[in-house]
Image (cartoon, rainbow, N blue to C red; front, top):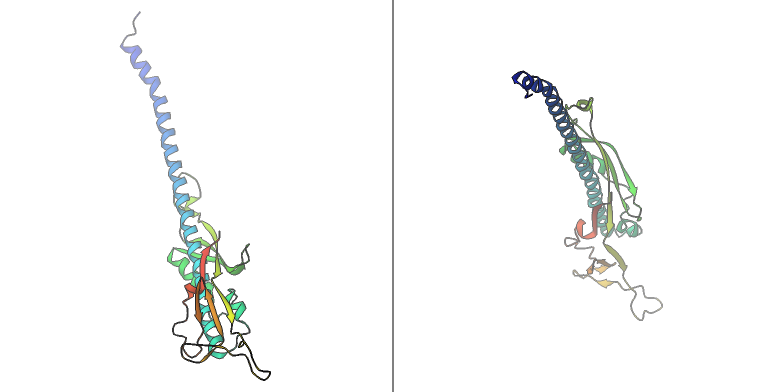
Length: 223
């Protein structure tokens, strides 16, 4: 016996709830994927802000290290030269973490922690942690409208220069003092900076050509 029109209508009526259930499940799955994408974008934004904050603090320290080196050569007080060239800044004139906070804010976040660190390979640097100023947003996952993202990053300051002090003359007399190498201005030079294959004879009377901060130190993210 062939099914009649009534049977066909009954079959369509039975199939409709199945179709609606499948469509509802697919929509829920799509919204869930959208929520995951929103969360990932927020986490990426937090990591970008953390990277920027850590790099900013390290770069600010690098600039202050160069200023400290210039002050040391101008004053002739070279006892702390090794520490400075090694990336150790004993007395910052400005707090590098303020710079970190500015860069975090530029990426719609704020710092929750910022402090100097020593990396696993012995380099000085800065670690920064941030929280986004925005949330994941409304989604099918409860609570995402109040959920922010957190991230951390560390930037290292890597020395690029070594110091070679002025050597005594080849045959000094008993009363003679060490003879420094001549500088471009004729002023006795305390020594030479060896920077990544380039030699720079320090001239305390003319420091206008002193290596830039980027020539003295590199700054990079470690994690």
